[in-house]
Image 1: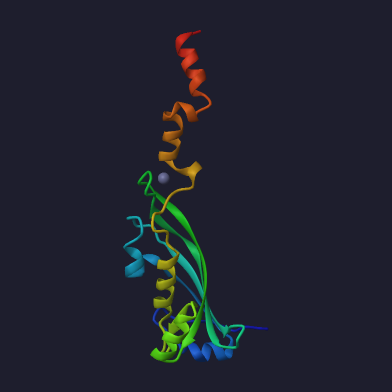
Image 2: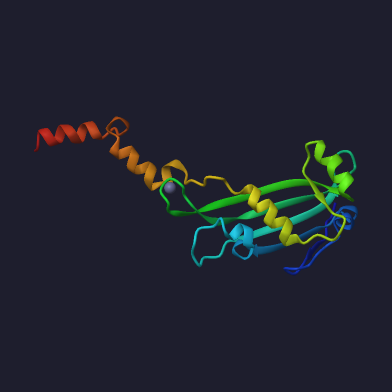
Length: 175
Ligand SMILES: [Zn+2]
């Protein structure tokens, strides 16, 4: 099925039910530093945090109108282990059912599905920011092998370093 992609401006609101009925996409790119709630979570610095986003209209298996929100990018976070900034990959895809009113929102919510109230037009920035916040780790950390704190603890702890024993031996028997 061919989908039409519409680029919207940073503030282009859209009708989610129309998007779902038409089965079309909205797409764009946003700097996460310009999303106030997300910016609070990022490492300080001037480097941009570009997030490519796509919002696709469609229907779930039961034929109910839905949106799929896809985010891809890299954002600077502070590693909670070594306190150094690192680039964390964002690759988030969320399926949201659309609710026409509060009653429908409550009913769909009880089904344990992700729901968005779409009784007015939606702001793509808002959806993107919500999904980005959900995708960010509560306690961001480097991968083990990339983390300076993890490397330090590997070498400080003699039992964990295969070379510690050798170094101790050399210290006793200098060449
Ligand atoms: Zn680290």
